[in-house]
Image (tube, rainbow, N blue to C red):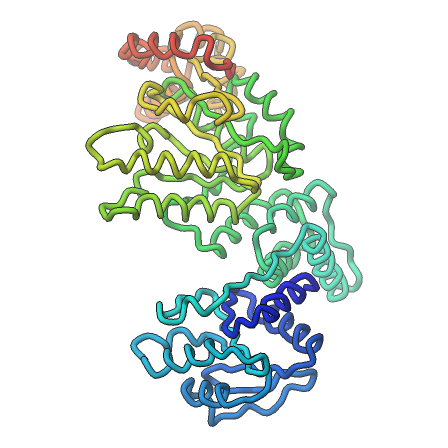
Length: 492
């Protein structure tokens, strides 16, 4: 708060008489402005439509109901000969189609005398009429640091302990640090509310609380639209194979979570055949690192109006930064960035917006892009330096195919030891992980229809009746492998 008071004081010293503060945490804004008024030795009054003007001090003054109407309040403020700070909460809706209020606001903002009052408009979002915009300065309160967030969590734990006969809140250091990291990007009030919710149900902070915390944070930041929140992030153990990718991520986990911009991992591009496990791997990165997973839907970005598509992307990337630390998953990225001459240059502008963000971002957002048709990707995106690494996800070998069978049989409560996994793996050479899963699903349907348990024969019959993509699209797969050779690192 001390830094906020200092920085606001600098704005006042510049003789600007209209300041805009966008924040959901109105109580903290008023607390900060009270500290500023005390330090400056000036009066502080707060206006709202329900109470009118009210002097804000250690002992709150009586509200003046005659100033509930904004015009009456602004006339009184304009006539004040003192350098009083006037905080107007949620005034902006009244400015629409009301030229008298807009003019009053402009006249107060244009006052150059040092001993004239300063107006501070406070709301969650502020959009001023164009006549007034150039007279205003925007100010944002600093978000809490990790030390402050840790203090907030500890305060809420102490409060819970006091309410529950001094019982201690159960947690471990790793989970506590994850909670603190995932509270970043929230205001003090929001962070306190989420910390209280995590603790109050069972008096513990556990790994089971992390997904719900991330989902609530996503909802608070109002990220719905082109970004979606993937609630169930897969455990990395649920991905068959991809050992090189797993090792690479494990080596960089600690560095990324420390959040130091100089050496923070940026992201990976996963290319490979459809159904090879790229999307599951993207989910599993978030699961392994204990981070929220956001999915960027390129289809919802595009808008027929000029400039709207790029604005949608910029807004989505900005909101992802607010959610950080997080994993941003761009699935089938070639569909949104494929270059073409028939879109009025939209794809080129979208590509430029994305490349600029990738080069300049300082926040902990780990990007995982997946692509099936690498030839459709613009060369600017895949050149060295854009991603930390390009991984090629090939079809699984026999050992990985057996592992995938074990995963999907176990998930459906079919004991793997009842089956000859080596025989199944040999029989489905050229199958992707998704195709192996469908073999298991088909066997379940067949067993239900025949009212008997799934057996080896049903699985082998499902394999024989499947034409894998490696056969149907053999030429495309060969071309993809040829491109990947020497350009990518094997994920297996």
